[in-house]
Length: 397
Image 1 (cartoon, helix red, strand yellow):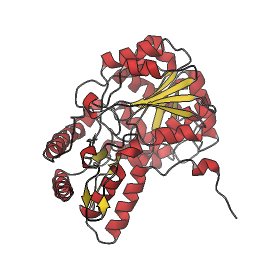
Image 2 (cartoon, rainbow, N blue to C red):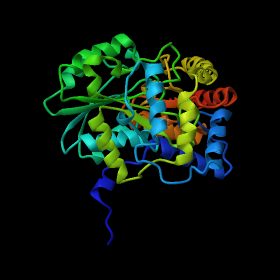
Image 3 (spheres, helix red, strand yellow):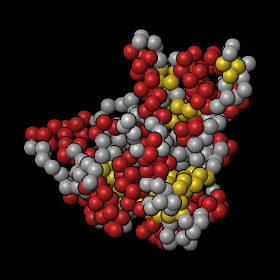
Image 4 (cartoon, helix red, strand yellow):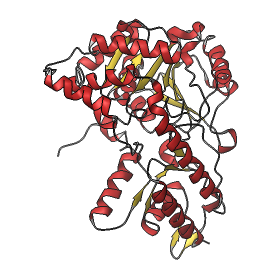
């Protein structure tokens, strides 16, 4: 009998992708499902980026690429880091990967050994913990709540660190909560991290350009911990380039080289055409992202307003990304006919089949009291979706 590996059996399918798959299956049956489950901008890639890709095809960029990315792209990323974030990297400290997901996996696999502890504040992006499992690491969660705007404190971080702690992974702006850490909050983290020279941090900043409160702040800006931070970014979210699959890191050279070695055994270099498109994106004036950001902010305000009009839901106002992560735990224990809602998964499936609205349950992100709404769709669909959700929840008692 063929048996799958324990490595395979110990990880789960990302619930974000699972719910998107279920939504497509229902839609294929003719069911009018509104999907608020996927983390993808509903905008098209800007024309100037598409033109760069077309030019690359005409200029025969059709051969194998260097594992860490074309040199001129890595130089462009260095320019972007300096211009936008005040971070100084050299090209040999940059590795370009097939999306930020691979960037993060490269770092985890390069740094984590069996039973090394990895701190992850909750809620967190679904793949962080599963990738740590693949590396045989041990996840240590630090909880947050809607009342704290889903942010942890430096004191919580300090208390979670042990002699076995090797890595911390967090995002700002955060998926799924939309939380954005301020410079002062990051400085408090930096003061703690500096006390632990064997602790490294993956700072996932893929939602940098979808920030509603002003200038994005990077953890690596603090000199005392610069060599302990791996900054992850990419073009998927800010430039509506999810399908191009380009992410990258800025990291100390020895970590970058380790990630290059790791990537060389998995995918080698990323798509030549996508790299040329990415270079156009990172060299562009960041102002080109503002129109999309304004649209997301308007949608955020709409969704928060509609959520707060539903009895029993607690929703904060997220400062970035394109998600709202409301607390829906007041519905636990309620019923409709023979169905009882016991957790966020139950509620998500109830809303999928009763309201035909696809969400992602909070347990996927480490907080079973919540569900994730993505507002990366039209205002018309958002209004209809929240109308359906409100009606379906009113049927529970």
